Length: 392
Image (cartoon, rainbow, N blue to C red; front, side, top):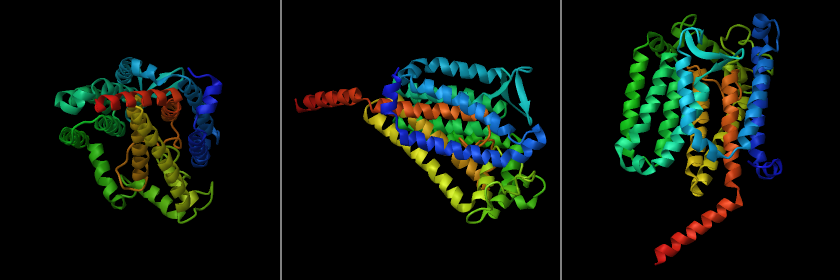
């Protein structure tokens, strides 16, 4: 583990500041979006802010531990972590253990706190896939069997997620794992074959559930049923349109006053658009764009140092958060059907926030290790040996 002095000297303070800026903006907008519903439902206007602050504290403590722990440890423990994730996904489906909310059984009650198990499971599966990609790079590159073998585990995880049901988490899980395999050198024809299979699997999952079909049809023209299946989306579009260029002002949203359901969770972006306008939303999207770009850059540096586990892990984290931001914004703007995916670092959701902070701490840790002069010297020595061999 690094000493506090070493961490202080090697950490990317600009990247950390970017994370804190998005998190701070998220806390402000969460408070604004939830203040009325919190006062009505919990008797305290700052109830959700307090709950989210507890999650920030837990996530920050876990993040400090991650920053001080070599990523090689997670590589060695990846099989154990994914086994724990599978256990949690099974437990949540056991009657009397899993907690049901709005018809979905996605939560376990741990010490009085509801934990959405799909969040830690996503990170654990990503760690496992990154480790598998390192151990079986040749098999992934040249063998269809080696390429498809890890997808059996992913398929089991997705089946458990769909049983909750949680289609949004399933889609993101598949996207992350396929991205890691593609980066690990999978052949294009194998990747296209897998993509076709995944597309067919997701289509069957949609068509087999009437409520998913209703969502799919409803988002195409929500104004056909503005007080039924299209209510949430129409209210979101009204909020976004009301913001115009510079918004109605912080705290002045009308749609959050019991018109827009889930204004502090899945649809917090609509409140941001209403209060901060197009200028504010462009600024937020730019911040997320920088976050994803920095994650991809960290991955590229790690790959250049032949630290492939770290490269795949960083790439997966970047794809994960980029996809989740895109899907959340797409749902709010009516580009995509409704999904239960939060806006990272902004939406209310304690499990999501804690796991997001852990994942971003992993990115910071990988970047710290990338900056280790010993790694660059080792890379230079290996390159010289390879050059000498070629010259012979």
